[in-house]
Structures are given as C-alpha cells and as structure tokens.
Length: 457
Image (cartoon, rainbow, N blue to C red; front, side):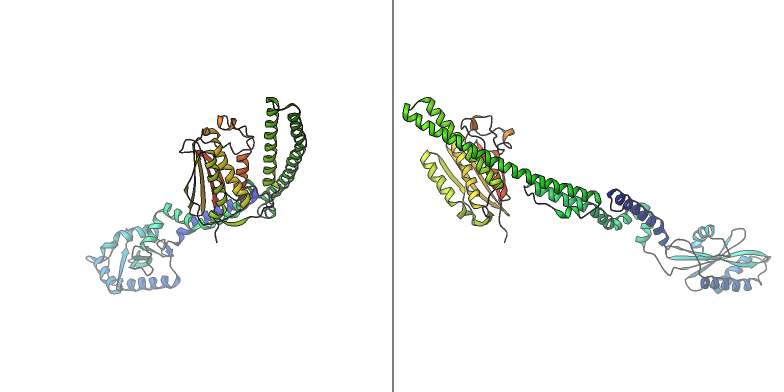
C-alpha cells in the first residue's frame, strides 16, 4: 500500500507535521532557566542549613528590639562566599543583608512556595534555591539561597529561547535537509521521466526500462505507458519511412516516362512553349522527389558514421566552391572570420551538404552580397550566413524549416521550390546535436545561424 504515491505523500506529510510539533514541544524544555526541582542531595543540604539557622534563632526573642537584625547576623554567619541568604516571613517581608536581589527573590517566591518540594531557577548568572522551612516563634518562615550559577547558558541560547519565532525558524532550518531529501525521493521519478521526454524531443526514441522500476506505482504505470508510446512511435516512424520510400520510387516511374515522352515529342514536333513548360515541371517534380528521398534517408535510414573533423579542413571545399560560384554569377561572397582549427563530432557529408544548401539559397535570393562568419565561443561554433535579398517576414522566421513550407513573400514564390531544402538543413544540424535558426540580417535580407558543439577531449 505504501507503494502508492497518494499514501506516501500523506504519510510523509503526517510525519513531517509530527516532527515539527515534537520539536516545538520539547525544545523549550532544554532551557536551563526553567524551574527545576532539587535532587535529594541538594534538598538535604538546604534543609541542614535551615535547621542550623533555626537553632541559632531560638535565642532571639521576637519581642526584642529589632529582632530581625539578629536574623541578618545569623545568616551572615552561615552564608558561604558568593552566596546570599533570604528569609521570608509569614507576612511576606524579606529579611536579607543583600537588597540588590530582592526582585529575584520575589519573582521566585511566586512560583516556588512548596516547602516539601523545593526548586531552583537561573536568573542570568545566578541561581536561587528554595524554599526551606525555618520554624521560629511558632510560625513558619521560608529560607531562599542565592548563589552563582554552576551552568550558565549562553546569551545567544537565551535570545533564541526568548523569541519563539526565531526558535521555529532555526528548527525549520535544521530540518530542511531532511525535508529536501523527502521531497527529492518523491520528485526523482518525475525528474527521470522529464529526462526521457527531453530525449524524445531530440528525436531519441530509445526505451527507458528503469522508468517501470523506480518510484511509486503511479510513476511505474506512467513509465510503462511512456515506453509503450515510444514503441508505437518507432513503429509509426518505420511505416512513414516505408511510405516515403515507396511513394518516391513509385513516382519516379511515371516521371521517367513523362520525360521520355517529352523528349520524343520535341524530336517529332520541335521546340514549343507547351513542350518547354512540360519539361520544366517534370524537372521540378524530379527535384522534389530527390529532396523527399534525401529527407527520408536522413531521418530514418542514414548509415553515415559520425567522425571527428577539424572545422577549417571540413568546410574548406564548401567555401572554395562558394567563392568560385560567386565569381561566375557576379556576386560578392566574403568570409568575415575564417574557420578555426577546433574539432567537432559530426556526420561530415550531411553537414557539408547542409552548409552548402544554405549558401546556395543565399546566392539564389541575394541581390549582390553574401557574408559568412565562423565564431568559436566557449564550447560552441556559431556559423552565420547573411544575404542582402528580400528576406522573410518576422512571423515566418520559425516556420521556414518545416517541410513543404513556402513563404508568402517573393523570396520563395519566385524560386518555385517545394520548401524541403531548409527542412533537410534542419535535420542535418540537429542530428549533430546542433541548432539552426533564422533571423533578420544586418544586410537587409535573411541570416541563417548554425550552432554546433565543439568536441571536448
């Protein structure tokens, strides 16, 4: 039954409340200034002293002049060093030679008047003991002893006990590690489930068997459902992969026939606008199918091995080709900051293809200028590609990496593209644990930002 989350939380809550109540009730008992009753040895010593004083007072008649002065003389004879004696008469008068502590004696007398059960209490650096019985002139007198305290409590501890809210705060502070441990024991399965969900969000559909073994029964059931969901996602992913592959291959056959028929028609009737239009649309359809197959292979069926590559060596051929192409089409391609010699772990062919795809898009849509920069900051490589083309609206910057998404502006409409190029780029970058996004460029067009992790030795 304790395996259920509801029972566990309720039980821990009750234990925590009981723990706090116990501390609040017991801690004040540790205050040494509280009234405590005497041990037999202390009680016996006080009674002996009272009897000795009583024997001396027999010779002092109460009718004598200033009889109470004789009391003081007798007490002076019996009190020890750093000790003061006080006698309280039946009419509550205090007889003593030391009047500095009368207020303490009065306060103690109000809470300790039982002669059969004398007590003691600490006041700052002194402790007072009593009362002890003295019989004088057929009346009962009370003897109190004031002396230096043998166990003085520190002022800091006194301050804590005198302020209940501070005492409660310290109690909560001391018990915080225990409460944190209890909270963590409950939250740990949820944290593991969040880790698994984060991995799924990154495209990792690996099952987590430990989710079905840790935590309360509710978490175990959730873990089992989570792993079942992953298995279904894998199955659907396989079906989608097969569907992409089958559709692409099935479309290739009639497309090939269409291109062959177009070629035959051009031979028989020669060139015409209609034949040229058919041929262009066939070429676009062929390019779209190629992009679909490329995207499907990257997402589901890519056997390329990740390798450690030096950044400047990895992208050298891509940049050389970009410089050559820019010269041929009469546009300015500049490298603001050169690649570093740091190492990255990546799928080299797919990553180079992604960067080349972004650069070619910049060539296609730019008016005159394209700028690329490579910046290493801490443990990340940031690549920015800027162009001075028409750009993309702010609300579409996050959408352009979706498959088949085409912007509403002329940037994408004029090209006649199917909207798969940047989706392939996005997939290639994320497979290498990177990130890609689009921003407004300082050149007036579009900026593509690619962030890749630097390899740690």
